[in-house]
Image 1 (cartoon, rainbow, N blue to C red):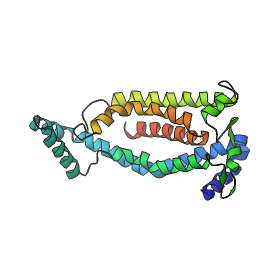
Image 2 (image 1 turned 180 degrees about the vertical axis):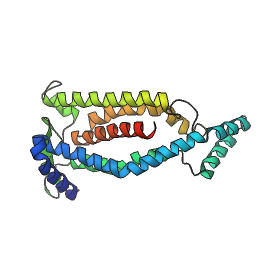
Image 3 (image 1 turned 90 degrees about the vertical axis):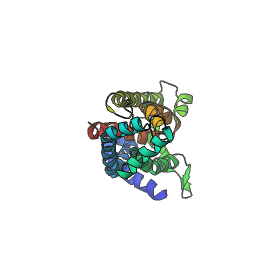
Image 4 (image 1 turned 120 degrees about the horizontal axis):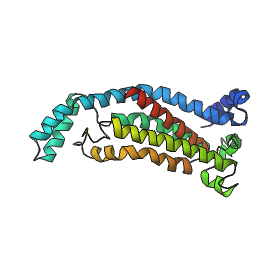
Length: 235
């Protein structure tokens, strides 16, 4: 973790002339973009997987009709079809899972008072007046809802709400899974997950409120990237 802290510090120093006191926040945004670029091949594979699952719908409809009176046999048949066509119903989760280590690294980095036995200098960095190691509750108990940190969080919540609304509308309109077309509905547990997916983006509001601001910036940047990426890959 100390190595990563040093990298963030050096990147912040490089960005200092452009972003001033918010250079560390800009470094986190760039770090998030680099992670998303690394994960992009998995996102493209997930898009191909969803298109493949959509192409299987006529055959799944036949299986549904053939095994209408035997749900368990229908589930097995659908799973066998996915295996035969080398299509994973859960491939779309891989990009998110692969980002978890980066998120937790940032979380711990900006939650620790010391790194390598020395004071954590990163906690002194701010984003538009809000300390990167603080949470929303710290902003509320500090200068209040309309203080500098409170206004920063108000702006972040607005961005998250806009991205979540975009994801919700798009998922309900164009995604065969979330629009109720039945993709993966016969796979145990996947149907419930599919119905809940359009609402999951709004949980980002809770995440942003409870994690350190640095980790919140990672989440917001990644979520926005994901929304734009999916719009391009699934059009």
